[in-house]
Structure formats: C-alpha cells, structure tokens
Length: 318
Image (cartoon, rainbow, N blue to C red; front, side, top):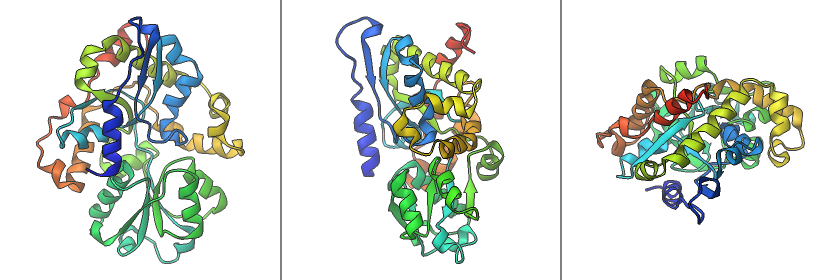
C-alpha cells in the first residue's frame, strides 16, 4: 500500500472520542488532506462558523471519497456519510517554463509531472488522464510536490513540466501568468462532465462502517454541521466566505484568495448527497488506474450512505 494510504488508513483507524458519554463532550479526529486547499474549505469553515460546536462535536477532518473505493480493494471498509465536493477540483496545469513544448496531454510522455503525493487522489487522476489519452503512465515521472506553496514554487521554477493542482494554487499561478496552460480542469460541472462523463464526488466525511453503526449520534451531528456550512456557503458571497476563514489559510493576498474562491464555489455540494452515478464514476476511474481495484469486485453500496443526509432533511436541514 502506498505510504499516503497507509498513513490515511492508520489515521482513520485511530478515531478518538474524548472521555465522557455526553455528545457535547465528543471529540472526533479524522485525517485531513490539506487544510489550505479550497477543496476542504467546508470542513474548515464549519469550524470557523461554530457548526461543530453547535452540533456538540469537536472535529478535525477529512478526505476524498475515492479513498473509500481504493481502500475497499485492500479489505478496509470505509464509508462516506456526507459529500461536500460535487467535483474533485483537479486541474492538469503546464509549468509556464515548459508551455512551448507541451500543448496536450499526449506531450506529457517522458515528462515529470507533480502530484500532491505518490498514491494520492491527484496521482490517480493523473494516471487516469494519461491512460485516457493513450499515454503510458509508466512513461511519466511522478513527483510529490504537495498542494500549496511547494507546488507553486516547483511550477514557477520549472523543476517539473506540469502538475495536478487545486485552488488556490491554480489561481495563484494564473495571477502570475495570464497565459497559463490548463490541459484538464474539473472545477466546474461542464469540465467535470467532459472529463468523466458525469459528476465525480470529491471531498467527503467518512470513516469505518462499523464505527458509523455504533456512533450514529456523532455521525448525524457531523453531517448536520457540514450541511449547515454548505447552506451558508451558497447563501453568501466569496468575500464573506473569505472573511470567515482563518487568516493563515487566506494568506496575505486576500483578493487572490477571493478570486480562487470564485473559481471553486461551484464544486461545493448543495445537498450533501452521494450520487450513485458519481460513485460509479470513481470506481471506473480507479479500475482503469489500479489493477487491484479492477479485480476486487467492490460493492459500491457499502462505500457510502445517504442515511444521515436524508435524516437531516427530515429535521428541516435542507
């Protein structure tokens, strides 16, 4: 198992509840892929808005749904219970220093391409895009460059030829190079449909299925907190969202952060529901990229549940 997945699985397996039986005393600790990435904004904003506190939980969150699918092939049964990203938000971006030699994904053969980390969601997306465009993934050098400042620096310096990036890093590069070349983009519905043929869920809250079954109050509370946050996001401006985010995540250039938010807001779910077709798209992508997933005969229905989102709807949290 790749290092990132070992670390992710270990963290998810170490979900901790603080002592005491009252829900208000519960502390739930889950893995987080990178708090500065806008793909995880709802989980960070929920904390800033006090939604976890209102729900009676202290949460450190989260990751992409595709890990549930990938780890199912390894016998680890994780289940998502609320989806906050309708689209993955990935973009395959060419380094400005190599834009003259790379005009299409086919041109990436023999090149060095950055991902957040080998074995990560960005790595699998890269392999999928390469295979889809008849490029042997083994012909491409995959380099871990992170998601934030380190990725931007690697692209600026040209130490990599291209990279799978997410906002705000994409918008930061676009601010420096108006001619920035983007070969694939999944920050909007139109582009996501063009790449995957359907919606493709990204960020979600998930954990072991057996933990969910025995901690339903906590799971419902976390679901309620995320749904309330998603509702808040879609009823406020990017400027208002930025005002609520921690200063260290916004950075010194607030205008640039707001610009990135405007590019990213369409990807945030309005319902929190998992679309079964979206889950199937994730399985299709990973089956193409991973022989282990392809032959695992995964039961997708066990990798997610809409039970808690539906229960929240009955409570009036729509």
